[in-house]
Amino acid sequence: MFLSRLQLEQFRNYKKLDLSFDAPVALVQGRNGQGKTNLLEAVYYLATSKSRHARTEREVVNRAAAEDAIPFGRIRGEVVRTEQATRLEILFTRRNDGLNFTKQARVNGAPRRSMDLIGHLRAVLFLPEDLTLISGSPSERRRYVDVALCQIDRGYCQALSRYQKVVTQRNSLLRQLQEQGQPDGPSVGAQLGFWDDQLVEHGTQVLSRRHSYLADLAPIARRVHAELTQEQETLDLLYVPSFNTGLYSDGDYLRLRDSEEVRAEELAKTEVDAATISERFRERLEDRRKVELNSGNSLYGPHRDEMILLVNGWNLRTFGSRGQQRTGALALKLAELRAMAAATGERPVLLLDDVMSELDAQRRAALLGALADVRQGIVTTTDWDQFSPEFRGEAQQIQIEAGNATLVRSDMAKAGDGLCASP
Ligand SMILES: Nc1ncnc2c1ncn2[C@@H]1O[C@H](COP(=O)(O)OP(=O)(O)OP(=O)(O)O)[C@@H](O)[C@H]1O
Ligand SMILES: [Mg+2]
Image (cartoon, rainbow, N blue to C red; front, side, top):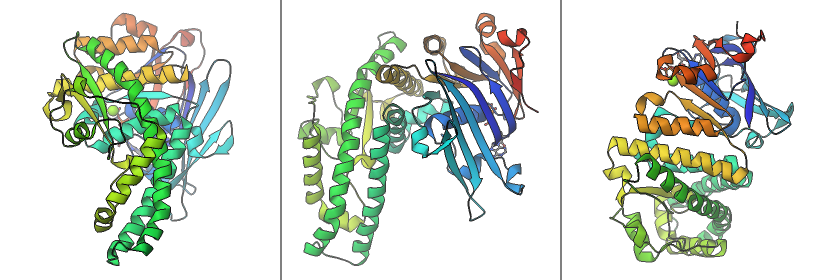
């Protein structure tokens, strides 16, 4: 999979950019605040239909463009796979409220739902703040799993989106019942019953897929982590849903849930099928109806899942040093890259945003090794000298200054091909 061209219009600090990629590695250099992260954000946007950084579409449209008569922003990319080229586009236009922006996706010129953009370009993005994958809240880890899985499996993305809608609806009903001070009677059961069915149906799809993905990911992450730590440390990745889906014994599940010390090798993990998950999900909802009614919130289901990482049996989030947490995050990301390649038969595009300076020599080497393994990597840096002359010599070198790109050296540029235009 290869992104051969990226065009930006009024995206972040880029007024206009037209960049062709022609080498396995593009090395993008720029001082702080020049647009390196924005460039990778645009690529990642095409892959996932979402921004990794922004909360609203409005944030990503060039601030100056908001003053234009018809303000808009646009990301376009051309992706080359085996033989065929696909044109991807996200257009941001102003909403009727005059404030926010809305996005419209196109694939080969035809309008598509944003969800249908996903899968045409697969990318794994490494950021310095990946550390929060380990140190941050469970929602960070859920998001991580969701974004990775969506790129592999469009069906997952659809199930997740349906599930999220159900949670919203069910929450508003629970809140309404809570405000009405409804006791748990037959009419409440009937009203909630419909949403319980939906929650269990879509939630089970999400849970089963997360189960199987994490079961695939865990051994890969363990292997990568062992390589990164010269076999000194073992990494266990444990999936801890908001109720015991049948994956663990009830005792083990409770210990995991309460973050007590657990020895991963002593956990008896079993494979669970969808029927078991949905049965246990339903039991949980019936058991805890009163609690949910009192809280006015859906308390069980994949939106409350957790993923725990243990290093040598210790919870990395609570006990890990900063360096250990960084290594854990790196292992997870590298594992994601391999899992994605294994699941799809295609190697994703690797995006490294200024991550080298955070890493020691060993971990740097691991990342550079991953770069050698993919068909395309786009790497940003503030400092050319972070990379060896050999590495730079083979890379397409791009310099970014205030949202303008200049090609420093590339083989095709030597041949006189105008690869890069940016007024
Ligand atoms: N919507 C927007 N419109 C115009 N400019 C924007 C917009 N959003 C961000 N910027 C600008 O983009 C610049 C930051 O770009 P970016 O984060 O890509 O920098 P960077 O090269 O990655 O820097 P660093 O090395 O510090 O990480 C800032 O100057 C910021 O003000
Ligand atoms: Mg940056």
